[in-house]
Image (cartoon, rainbow over all chains, first blue to last red; front, top):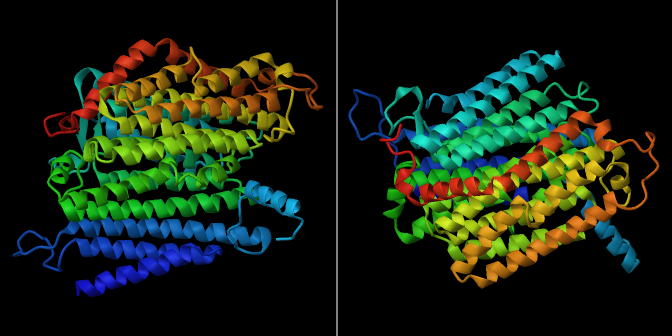
Amino acid sequence: MSVVVALLVGVLASVGTWLILQHTLTRVVLGLGLFANAANLLVLAAGGPPAEAPIIGRDGPFNDPVPQALVLTSIVIGLAVITFLLAVAYRSWTIDGNDQVEDDIEDRRLAAEERARKGTRG
Amino acid sequence: MSALLPLMVALPLGAAALAVIFGRWRRLQWVIAVVTIGLTLAMAVVILIEVDHDGTLRANLGGWPGRIAISMVADRLAAIMLVLGAAMLFAVLIYALGQEGVDARSPWYVPAYLVLSAGISAAFLAGDLFNLFVAFEILLMASYVLITMEGNDAQIRAGTTYVVINVVESLLLFLAVGLTFAATGTLSMSVLPERIAGLPVGVAIGLNMMLLLAFGLKAAVFPLFSWLPDSYPAALSPVSAVFAGLLTKVGVYAMIRTETLLFPGGQRTLLLVIAGITMVIGGLGALAQVDMKRILSFHIVSQIGYMVAGLALGGVAALAATVFFVIHQIPTKTALFLVEGIVENDTGTSALDRVGGLARRSGLFAVLFLIPALSLAGIPPFSGFVAKVGIIEAGFSGADWVIVGVALLASLLTLVSMVKIWTGVFWGDPQPHPRGRVGLVRHHRVMGGVTAVTVAACLAIAIAAGPIWDFCERTASQLVSTQDYGKEGSR
């Protein structure tokens, strides 16, 4: 069980990282979603093996409720952030028709100077 | 008295809700914001006096016993940060009121600003790691909205970088918090030190690194700083003033907590190396820029290096210097960005080659820039000099010659790039301007007035350096004795 969870965390985290490094904002958003799920699963798995719900009147062994509370909070925050990012991606699309994560304007200016000096088109 | 602690967070959040409800009446929104942030400032001052006299305050929310409750803790460091935070938020709010076109601004500006204020207070007061994470999320969410407020091309581009970087930071912090809980079984910062001390060395270093990575991203230390100079300049000038003054310092605050309370003396060499490179890279980056806002943004990075250096050196003297540095840095940096805001508001740009001759248009305005600029570079008799002397003295007493040399070199770089702003913006012939040669401060009374008050606060820190230094030493000795942080016995 825990090996499966560990593997799943690893796969989600690595795919998430790869997607975050892409140049398209929608892929970045998907990557963040996957990475967030990897983090949630990891924290959930760190809470220990599955056991009884910790309610007064039941017999143990109980599960630790704190990691689940943490994960719940994290899911809610993740939802809000991803919604916001999708709005930004949409806005970016209405402005210039794509959702590329563009280079900084100053960086672009410096790169353009560099290209002009070399006399080539990048 | 400890009832004030949750109010510092609840009041701005409630006011934010009110401001959303009254979104159509902009004037009313601003009244709500001014009253609320004014009140939080007053409460923060009361908390600071109380904490300095009678010791750490602690509030267990909902009346639960300490081990279960969500707790808020205010020791001296948290209290002084609360005061500085509220004061800067108040100043910038009034400044924003004086800007042209304030009524045309989005109805979400004031609510987001209030939520930001709540988040900053919550981060300083958080008594456990998870609340610290939640507080970071509150202030980040508000900052996402503020940085993309106008939704234009530049803001969306800068905002994308900012949001993505900060979401990654949040995820790392969440992972670190979850793993800390898995390893120690607690998140309360008053219990964590003893539990962490009992962990195997490898686990402790791993947790320490993850927390440092997350907070270092927020504080923009080398090599995690490159998002900052790309994103801050795109925001509205009052927004970038608040971000520059406060947000990175929240990261520094969290780093101070991690390295003094949870992992005392853990990563001295690593932090010293990071601090040195951060100072120099920030200074060199500032030299290469040709835009006032971007130069100032690189200075943020460079100055963070000094705080990390003080933190790394450790011991009461160095920590006192770090606290003094933060106290000096917040108003000084805010003042510089406020000056920049007036330049941008008046001339429509902050590019060095398109502005010029402002000193001839308004001598007073030039002085308003010169004082915080020289202070930031560490020229006596301003507050930056006292702060840097403190850190350099701590370096001398520990015979850490390298960091002393690097700190002095970085000061020089700061000074040179300030001279660059001075020659670009203030010297030279005035550009043709529709208003002719009207004084800048006379034309932007409210903005100029707020800037003048902030600069006066910087001067006051230099004048009252003695008492403030004593306070910093008390703060530092409290930081060093970790058992003082929010134990059950304290109220």
